[in-house]
Image (tube, rainbow, N blue to C red; front, side, top):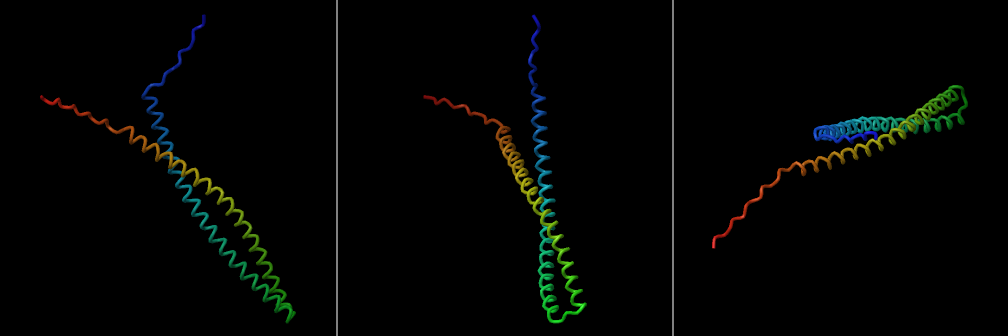
Length: 151
């Protein structure tokens, strides 16, 4: 008859090491998540500022194109046509820049949302585990002996 293998039983020291290592990993994940959220948030702010700048520039160029077109109707000379062409070139360049920024903003917003969600989850887990640890590690209260009343 073949010998059956004995199931190995985990030692308390090994279990303690595993639990404390997991806690450390969770703490590191929480810290890294917070750093990533801060970094991505600052990138999002920069992209928002860039987007606003481009939007203002675009509005100015649209007004300039409109006034130049009206001027061209009144006075159709080469200088006015050249000015209108230059404004339209600038406007197309700004539109391309705006499209790039929009794409970057949407991808960054999705990433930031996922990062915040996961970081919040890790922080919550860590908080709950620390509270449970605190409760579990409380010293036991000593029970008082009752005095026997003398009759």
